[in-house]
Every structure is written in structure tokens, then in C-alpha cells.
Length: 195
Image 1 (cartoon, rainbow, N blue to C red):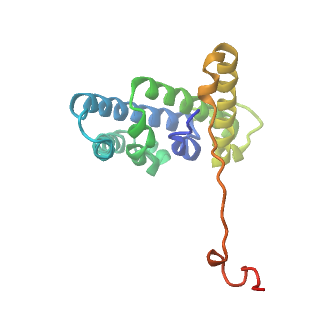
Image 2 (image 1 turned 30 degrees about the vertical axis):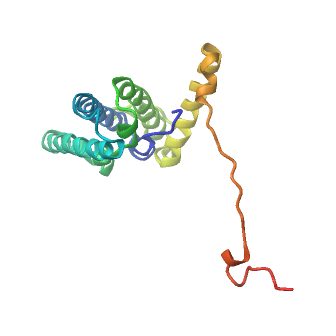
Image 3 (image 1 turned 30 degrees about the horizontal axis):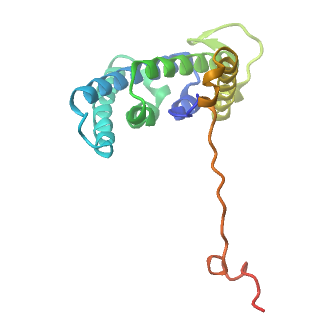
């Protein structure tokens, strides 16, 4: 939530609790096995090569997971679509491999999926919850962004209140840059007239 990493699957397909649990469960072995391999064998390998190796390891693990899901639970894999395969190339794997990261990812994606399913389709794990009001628009990607924004704001408020000494670590650093426009960079119709 702080670094906005790995959000694509949450925004795009975490629209049901089943799909969210599937993505979290698939993400966990990818992170853990990649981390174990990195600790055992990749300490002296340059970072730019490690990222490629992480991708290969993640792809091998996800391929096995997709095969098992297609064999035993084909109805669930349809909900995850291409995003399950893209889990192997997630930026979290290359930057933040750890058990805590996997648990944190699950702690975000599962509640977002459950809330979007309850509010968007009045079901939970596919069972009707008898809520007369459903807002199917929440199932669209902006609904995922909306829930992530509320989760990020709640996390920031919690950190500010309970751990004020770490508040600065959660700030986003936006660098101010200047743009220099010269006549040679502009198209002829927008360039200033010559005197």
C-alpha cells in the first residue's frame, strides 16, 4: 500500500473472495521459493541478473500452479485470467521477496476481493447474502483503486497515530522537475514566430 507495488491483480481481478484467495495463495509460494533460492544461491550475482532469475523461477512455479488449477478447479482460473500468470513478473518479487511481504499482500488482496464481491454482486464466496442493494460498478477496476485508496489512507492514519516515528518513511517523495522548451523541440505550428 505504501509503495503501490503489485496492485495490477488487485485492481483488475480481485472482484471475488475466491479469486483473491487464489491470487494470494499463488503469490505466496512464488515469493517464498524465490527468496529461499536467492538466499542460497544468488548473493554474489549482480542485481540486474538476479531480477531475470527471479522471473524464471516465478514463471516455473506459476506454470505448475496454473496446471494444477486448470486440472482440479477450472472454474476458478477463469476468474484470475492472465493476471495469475503475470504474478511471476510482479515487481514485488524482484524487490521485496519475504514472508512478511506475502502475508501483507494477502492481507490486502483478500479483504479487497471480499468487499468488492459483497458490495458489487451481493455474494460472498459465490453464495447470495440477500442484500437487496448491489453496486456492480465496484467490480470494475476503479472499484479496486477506490478500496486500495481507503486501505492506504487507513494504514497511513494507523502509522501516524501508533508509530509517529515511522511516519516519514511512508511519505511519497515527489521530485520537482523543470521542463525546458526550446524552439527546436516544438512542432512548426506551435513554435514562436521569428522576429
